Amino acid sequence: MRQGVERVLISRAEIDSKVRELARALDREYAGKNLLIVGILKGAMIFMSDLARAMTIDVQFDFMAVSSYGSSSKSTGVVRIQKDLDQNIQGRHVLVVEDIVDTGLTLNYLLEILKAREPASVRICTLLDKPSRREVEVPVDFNGFAIPDEFAVGYGLDYNEMYRNLPEIYVLKREVDTY
Ligand code: 5GP
Image (cartoon, rainbow, N blue to C red; front, side, top):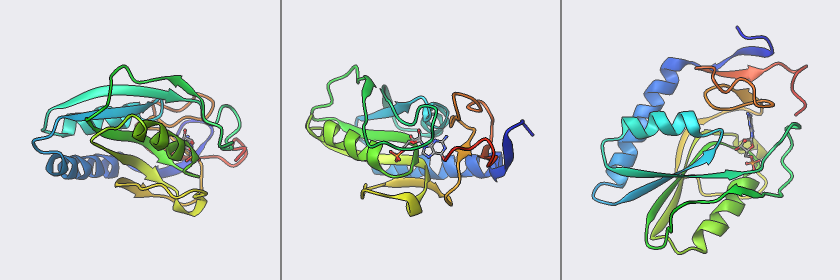
């Protein structure tokens, strides 16, 4: 096991089967619609690429990057857009793909911004959800795994830009974690 991680939280097999299950649900939900998947960089990158390839309907990609935790793993509620969408989403069906919903502050803010651009619909798909940490209500339409209040890394999720390429989801060691 990589230094700094404590134990596997979600295995590769569990991730694969959940990704297929979510893809089937999205295929049904968006059949016949022109779907734009918006990945939130960088954490959702790996999840989004697996999810999109497991889907059978036609989709288009776009990305946003927002500032989140930085080096200390605390949510500030102040969200800054570092990279905006390339496309106009007015009248489009938009699916925001996120790695994890924690306090909900990031997505709450993003949803406001996206809704103001008048898409036909905007929904959220997240790989992980920490419901016990929620500070603002956000409508999570498609959720992979609800997890306890622990700091998760791997499969796209980082700590100080590390661990994103781990194929499974791990719990960060307490002595590393500043959470
Ligand atoms: P929120 O605004 O919901 O508190 O935070 C969302 C963002 O915080 C996520 O997109 C992610 O970047 C970061 N985050 C929250 N919890 C975790 C965690 O357990 N592990 C990692 N790596 N990032 C987290």
